[in-house]
Length: 208
Picture 1: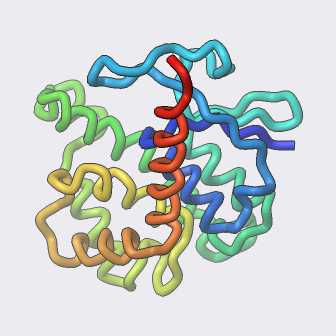
Picture 2: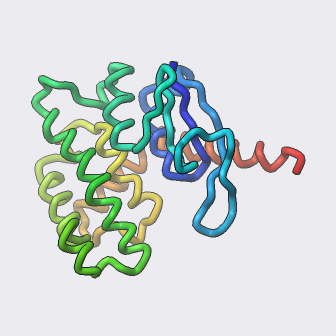
């Protein structure tokens, strides 16, 4: 059994979208939790077993799993979804590389942009910067409409998500903007947003 700890409109929303894309949301035990947010709202939720009280968090047969890159590899595999790739698939090395690139490079660089320290020498030395991310995306998208070619996959969902959430961070490149738009038009993106909106509305009705 998989338990999925999720906070509406948070870093876990793209995991929610992945489960919706695979039509597997009903196959997990969804637990809504509160989290501390950057604007000062929210709070640490004692119902959230994440060691740092963050989301997303999975509990799989009693064992915890953290970090979206791990989940985007694990969930399509465990549910045998074509949105993932398996050992032996020709695209498997590229698929794993994109997942790791998101967590190890894209997210730190975007946090640097958001926090105003993108030009920090240590950050640039370790991760490079937004121009390199744009170049890597463009190189892949020059070969097809999605990161692995003609077929949308979970890596597209993960890599496009920050640009859908923060449109101003989208590279000023028509090829990349068109890819972000294609990814954003996938029905599960709107379904995840509607799910989060309904969860927030239901929470607002609860007594203080």
